[in-house]
Image 1 (cartoon, one colour):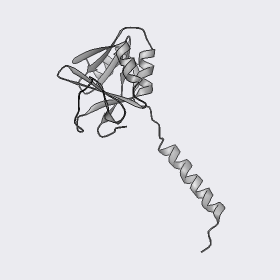
Image 2: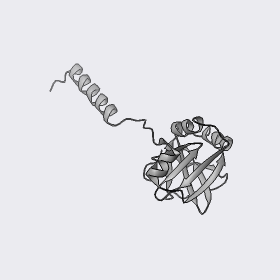
Image 3: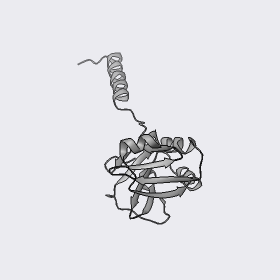
Image 4: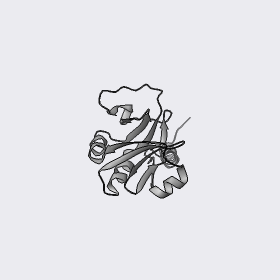
Length: 148
């Protein structure tokens, strides 16, 4: 059986191109809404915890791809890439604890979109949202199962 190298290379190129189109490697997770739109779409805030703009900005500089949030009994926990705990220092989390995962880029966009000193992480009926000024970050993925 004789294999034509150029035909094989062409098929390989086509498969590579198809997989990069159908399965992109970099997906932005999260979307910014106005606060009023978020209230309308995702319901009222049930519980919230605040963190200073400066603290969150500093935490975001310690991760490359993602940031994850969880509120449990009034305590905020923030993770970065690989589920590494960023906040509070020294806390450990179980592998099965569910966090709301957002792309770092969209979290940076949120805190760059307005002015203020405080960022609020909120629990709504079925969602964790992050609000800064008049904007709210939503449409997270759950980690697990989708973790970066």
